[in-house]
Amino acid sequence: MTTHFKEFPFEEIKKPNGDYFDSWQDAKDHGFDDDQIWSVIHGDEDTFCYCPPHHFVNHIGHIATHERHDGKTYYEEEL
Image (cartoon, rainbow, N blue to C red; front, side):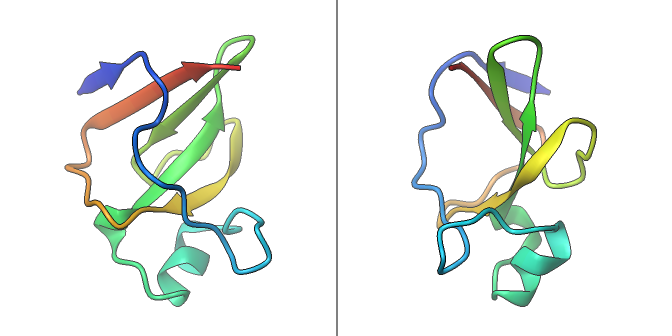
């Protein structure tokens, strides 16, 4: 696992109305592959973490990216 303590470097793709995808499956139903989907979770205090899509504790929603991830990379950013 690799955690980067910096702003998420990719363009976030959400639902056409601008909301997060409700679930991993919701993002898949919108045409994204597993390795394009990220969970967004609320971390400790004032942090957000962008992580592989299987995370659900403190889950805010899912996003997708054009870039593909390796399933082991995390990005943590402060509010």
